[in-house]
Length: 248
Ligand SMILES: [Zn+2]
Image (cartoon, rainbow, N blue to C red; front, side, top):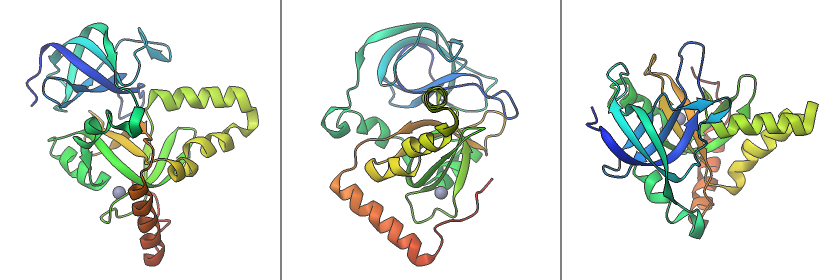
């Protein structure tokens, strides 16, 4: 269990909307605790309608008073009050030079390896790099493969990322009947062509072996990344496992 309580500075990585059917989730913010470098899940986070109240920006620092939530089996979960938006924002400049350290520190080889840790409740939230990607709607979910040789088959997970939900609403308002196609073009496979897509995955409190997408991250690809990506695609095509059936 993480021994975290009192006043903390937390870097906001992702905001997640509530899930109202089993397994349920309360609206939350996932962030990095400045003092320990560990991930914290602040839940329930004050929420009004479709966003946090007051709205907090991803990659901004907030000052919060937290306490360990004894009813939540996940080690990272803390209750929160007294939210103050602090000065400070971690910029995306220089190809994510300032942001990468916060991702790398919590990067797992695959969903498979994170799920193993989550089953033991050692770690229930972390990043995974993505090699194939598609986004599906109603309900919003992502279908992907991990950028790792041990990825057994495509995964299909519910999306609780607040920004993706907000983008889905905007796309629907803007494009009407064509919105689903437009949304897939923006947030599905084409995104992976241009960016080094990472997903922040979290286990549910009520079902620690089940995961959902808490946040979508798309730093620019480096030349080295692009080579790696090409390698993974070629490797999969060679093995003939490009389009496996969705798991769980
Ligand atoms: Zn996988």
